[in-house]
Length: 287
Image (cartoon, rainbow, N blue to C red; front, side):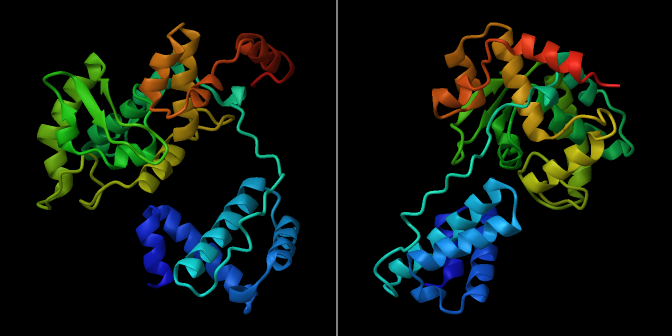
């Protein structure tokens, strides 16, 4: 089996692409990579620290290298993974950044933004509504089909991913009419005689991918809140944080968000969040 096929078989397309690129760079830099030992790899990691200042980048590259040696072991090219025991101590912050969170009212402003192209208006409003009301990941939205939308019950079914559980969430009343008009009127125009059961259709009639969604959000809303990070992640974080601030039970919010572990939800429940926000606004007020 080739490395490319191994990656495709074991990882998602996006992850496989990232790993493939990192492995290619590693092998090109070290022609004897196939026979490398522990010290060779730790030296490479040391060089990475000189080149990159983000611990997450170094961690991802190391993960790619580990996968490379897993592949060699699976092909019996070697019988050990010299990178397996390497543990990084670089601190990767996973704290919720308070300055980037949005109130429910601010999130509604994203839905009310005027669109330049009328034929995309309904699709884009369907997209942003799934972000600000259901707090979905771009990858989850990409996999949605029209069969996952039940207008009779006013619900949407979200498939499981490697990070989140499957779940059925209720649509807001204003979403039901919006979805009906998009699915029954505008979606066929975007398909332009093509065939697809995907919910969100791109401008050329293809599926709107997770990457397309991420780019659309950043491009469309960066001017609305110029001093803050407006992206799918901060929107999702805001929705989850707002639910907890409103007093919703932690376990219910966990199900809503699709978190596989309670700890993933707990990090959003910050006991002094209002105090911290007040401090941020006092000492670093937005102009």
